[in-house]
Length: 162
Image 1 (cartoon, rainbow, N blue to C red):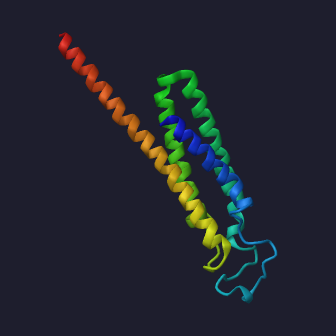
Image 2 (image 1 turned 45 degrees about the horizontal axis):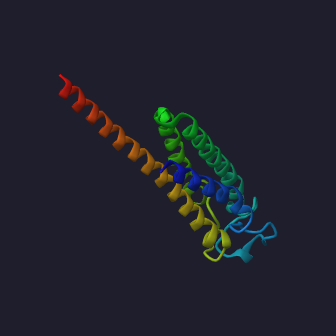
Image 3 (image 1 turned 90 degrees about the vertical axis):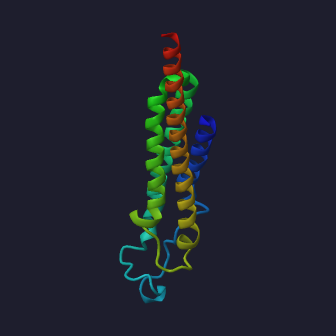
């Protein structure tokens, strides 16, 4: 599960970091300002979606770093680092929430349903965030269940020896 989680984290981090600059691009810099844009409102500072690439880049880089650290610690320290891995899983969950929040409640996208940021970028970032968050939750849950079963077997072994 750890290798799959980390490979998925690396892939999601790359898409988060590179996507908004390439195929998940936001509205262009040469957008018309004013009433021609319909329901987008005042755009004196540009559309709200222009902050998505930077926020997504930072989130993606952190996710890539978390995945690389997790891969390194997994191969070097085996099961000794379960507490550290749990912290990395919590960070992964937080990054998933941030990835979902970037186009929804942190930065937002254009109001017009026909804009690329609304039709493509927003759903893609939400999907990536949900996948990242669920991987962290699933990994953390599996650790808690396996730690509980290990404690039960140790208690049964201690009881049988007494």
